[in-house]
Amino acid sequence: MCTLHQIDRERAEAFSGKLLNVLNHGALALMTSIGHRAGLFDVMSALPPSTSAEIAAAARLNERYVREWLGAVTAGGIVEIHPNGREPRFSLPAAHAAFLTRRAGADNFGVFAQYIGLLGCVEDQVLECFQKGGGVPYSEYRRFHEVMAEDSGQSVLSSLFDVILPLVPGLPRRLEEGIEVLDIGCGVGRALNLMARTYPRSRFTGCDLSPEAIAAARAGSAEYGLRNVHFEVRDLTSFDRDAPDARYDLITAFDAVHDQARPDRVLKGVCRALKADGVFLMQDIAASSRMEENLDHPLGTLLYSISTMHCMTVSLAQGGMGLGTMWGRELAQELLREAGFREIEIHRLPHDLQNEYYVVRKGSR
Ligand SMILES: C[S@@+](CC[C@H](N)C(=O)[O-])C[C@H]1O[C@@H](n2cnc3c(N)ncnc32)[C@H](O)[C@@H]1O
Image (cartoon, rainbow, N blue to C red; front, side, top):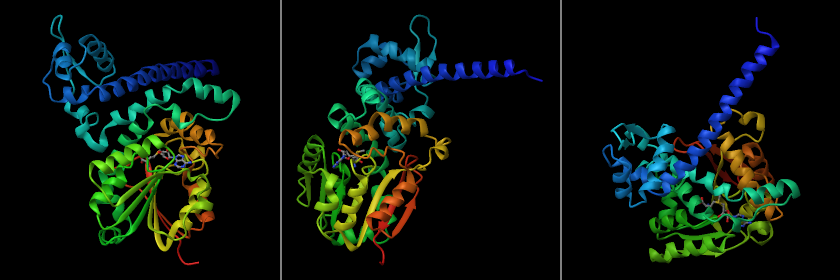
């Protein structure tokens, strides 16, 4: 039988091993982000086992940095080493490339790894908030809209026409015929520009707090010469009061409700702006509102961390509610009902581990 002393020692040793993994895996996430951004995984996936000089030349990068990076990702089990005297060769197994290259599409984990470096940049400001309260504004996150666009490129764009829009029966047909659509918190507007190109008879409006994101969205629509899409810089904090009455047939929100200053008022505005038979299509995080039910969540640690370092704090920076990334489906439904919605369906889609898709209607009153 084990003594208490022995049990504690075993537990302590196991825990210190876990912490060692945390350090190695944290560092590996940063190296994964570098590998994605520098195009190293894409280049390596097309090369036979190669030396660091060959890989650097193919990627047009500095050999010394590539060699050191190879040390990290080889020790981390992403890349394989083929000993060859003083000039080892390295390869990216096809089974790993399937989750790390741009060709992997929605399965590319390199996109998500970028959040680690992105969030690390605001560590000092967030730490100050731990001491003084308040929040860190969007403007402090240098690459946020760029990374977010890549993220939603995977979860939304990859499946928009095949899976997401058909969640609402008859919606693709109505979009073809011509309806009024609003996307709230549209970011750089890639989803809306793509819909506007695909459905020229419908009219699309995108709004977002960020002038930088809206400038990118307008540039995107200009590039395609779109005349049926319009983007505006708009703070949705008082949308409950300033939303137009019954103007839209479809309102979408892709990962854009929980980090608003006032999700409650935004949802009230959405209800007001929808026509009586209109639909609100909301993508938001798949989680419970109860922390103890999220302990086995496959992305729990990552999402609570993203919340601490971004979603909660950007809302608090606007004097908002700071609901956080993991506000959960129970609170989401409560706020939707309070906003005036009566019919709420929640869908899970196989390509998207992170989100749920809400199809919401006013219903009969
Ligand atoms: C997580 S991003 C999602 C962006 C985009 N929908 C996508 O999927 O790529 C949330 C967006 O909400 C916007 N946002 C945050 N607070 C806002 C507010 N008070 N009014 C309007 N937009 C806001 C942010 O600027 C950001 O672009």
